[in-house]
Each structure stands twice: as structure tokens, then as C-alpha cells.
Image (tube, rainbow, N blue to C red; front, side, top):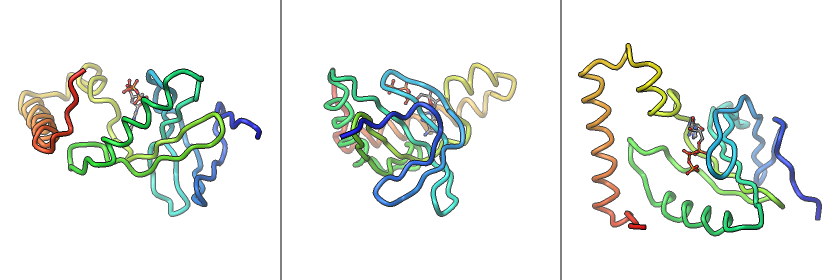
Length: 139
Ligand SMILES: Nc1ncnc2c1ncn2[C@@H]1O[C@H](COP(=O)(O)OP(=O)(O)OP(=O)(O)O)[C@@H](O)[C@H]1O
């Protein structure tokens, strides 16, 4: 079977849902995250994880298993996990303001003390939720 290469934006079909990549949001340890628009016009984020033959598949499975059980307003919502030959896709809620660390450091002029308190309180609520639900793994 041909391996699926997801390098340049192109329309992808994940279980009958068509996604139109809009732009690259960033890259992490496993692959690249794209902003996409689904067939209903909803903007979402899709993380692509290249199956490099190492442990990516197992690590992604662990991440998805835990994340799919997390439903909280301060945690980016997991939507679905798809696999095509050579690549895994994780679709999720689009965080409109992007990466929090970048937001805090690059937009520091907007980050008033009250906004910082608000962000810290949201983070603590999310961490507390994860602990209450026993979904924290010590490594
Ligand atoms: N749901 C999202 N909404 C908006 N931007 C996102 C979203 N997810 C990721 N990004 C952007 O893409 C970048 C890479 O995300 P990614 O999750 O791949 O890397 P990471 O956070 O370093 O995690 P890891 O390497 O552990 O997978 C982030 O830093 C952020 O800028």
C-alpha cells in the first residue's frame, strides 16, 4: 500500500470527513500541526505524526487514550484519531490564541497582572481536574 505523505497542504479525507488545510500552526516533537477547515466550515487543528518506525505509534496511542477522556473547558478538546499508511492524524479544538507560552512571552504588553492571574487560575483548574480524575502519569 502506498504510504501517505503529508508535507504540503492538500485536502485530506479522514473517515469520510474532508479537511482543507489552511495554514501551519507549528511543529512539535512528533510532527506538524495545521489549522484546517472541515466540511461544515468549522475551524479545527490537526496534528500530523509521521510514523518513523520508532516508538511514535505507541506514544501517540498513549496520548490519545488519556486525552480522549479529558473533557474540560480549559483543556484543548480532543476530537478524533485517524491513521493512514505512514502517518497518524489527531484532530482537536483550535486554540484561537495559539501557544500559551508564546502568547505570554511575545504579547507581554497585553499580559496585565489580572490577565496573568486569570491564566494561572485556568491552568490550576485544568491540572486539578486531571488529578481528580486520576489521569496524571508520573514518568
Ligand atoms: N490545538 C491547537 N490550536 C492552535 N495551535 C496549536 C494547537 N496544537 C498545537 N498548536 C501549535 O503547534 C505547535 C506544536 O504543537 P505540538 O503539540 O506538535 O508540539 P508540543 O506542544 O511541543 O508537543 P509534543 O512535542 O509533546 O507533541 C504548538 O507550539 C502550537 O503553536
